[in-house]
Length: 414
Image (cartoon, rainbow, N blue to C red; front, top):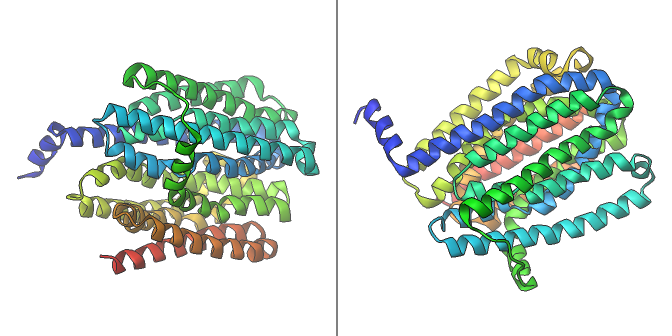
């Protein structure tokens, strides 16, 4: 079969059509994630200044802990369960309600803990509105069941919702953010967008998939927490070196340095997004069939290498274009972080697409624990000594541990 026939067969195959549709949908989301900062970030940094921009990034770093708690690894565990039951409506509804009620339970716990922090930690109390508005991102994420659309392989709905409400955020920023004191409203505008998107997505699930929300017994929530625990640890533990690097930088230094690192991480995340697209596109598929996994993994590894090289050689250009002249200290940080796409690709191929697909969730969880705890120890040592350079090096080093351990244990379990 020649290349033309293979492409034609892919478009005529139902699984092939889903893969292409999901890839294009996720690509559009990531293009929007990349292009919108080109417009809004320079404006925000100019209007707010690096310090206040860094303060909003610090608040986001705090809120990210609660985001990880409420997400609880469902982008792995629930997606895997949904992908195996796409034709069983009753099972889909059961999984949806079990996961949704568990997320709501975790939201209530998170809100209580977050409220105590705002009340009793002076540095948080001083800017309490900023943190309260930032917590709206957690509420919106709970309402926005991306995991469901990913599991049933219908990502076009997420694409439309994401792009629509991100454009809304962009417009609102230019309307309402006019001076430095408006920094507190940036997370509020983001929260409005994601909460609106979440409500709209719930409407789509009800109308298109005929899935009704129902309360479930607490025993179901406990079972879901137990079932998804390893996926939760696998996803949340890396924040001990990535998100915590931003958080500790704010604790040990100042908000200006947080701004430099946050800007570099945004660029790094934009480049790394291609790996996220490939992972999310193929993960439901490789859980259904293992026939093409080797070819898929080669594509992921090669793309990771090429994106890392591109990120390194364009560091100066992208910082100037996206972040502006006030953020030149971010250039060496982007260069350090340029290894990230390649390391994430290795982790996807040998961790997610092998260990998780093989059902070795606990092993992959332990790999995440070990590499992330090493990252946390490095962060406590390197950030006070080397400031934002140390933070960037910690993130890359911990990712290196993660990738190497995933490779070693995948080879051992063949």
